[in-house]
Length: 384
Image 1 (tube, rainbow, N blue to C red):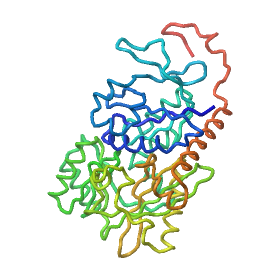
Image 2: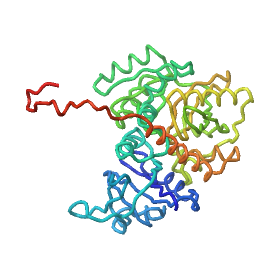
Image 3: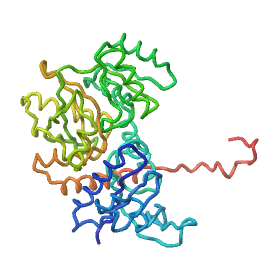
Image 4: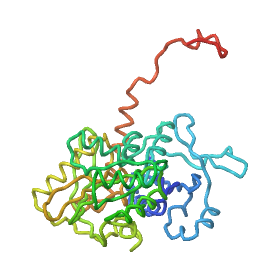
């Protein structure tokens, strides 16, 4: 009997469209001899839809029509398994569309990649591929992850975090005085280069700060790297055992790699980005990037596949870890294909790791018999 894999994509995120591309790429590359893939599209309103057409990328040119031809469902735990219950106009029906054995979340951005969706899976007792709840949440917070990386001895750039309630002029003054120009301003919890700008003077900094706050209530301001080159590396595994992929160098169209560079040109997600693969760097630097990537992956106790992005000064060769992507665009399959590992094989490993984690969790004790409810007197004045 085939394992039923629910492939979840979409969600209430600015990276919604990117997730659709990544999700359907994964859906089409699952081993059809081992798995029965069930596509589950999450709308911008956080509604779940499934059906044959949900797995067809061309259908997303007209989402309204697509949804009218698909089945609205909600995941429910019943008799030890997760069922997709059909949802009608008046609520749930007594009808099961299908059930799933394991979830493969291929989502990007806030409200989905940040531990929210993973928390739902955990509550359902549904095995899911990729990072657990805590690693997913930390992986979305650029500031918190930098604190952990710095503690682990991994080089990161100096940065300051600011909130939207702080005065804009105070923010600009503090950042320019503490770090100095040029600066990079970015939302603290978004990916895909959304909301990022480089500032080389105070006027540019004001503009960049206002722009970043359009996307998030918390922003990060850090030192911009001169002579910038970007080097990316993927890691596959878990806290016990992990390995690094080949390194790539994305071709940067401007001072930073933009959302348009990554996703708009070509419509193939991160796999369509212009890149140098393998990256034209020395063997020594390649080994250093790979070693730092594995160290970062383990520092956050990640699982599954992640992509770690580095910034490099092209003249000095100095590198800094920029960020980790716990569910990378296109699942970073292209970095693994460069090592000889096919996308289908990589997905097999992801699902195997998910089942392994679920077995380990099942062995833990989650209940303590105290008899506390037998002795509880009830009422608002009852004492514990």
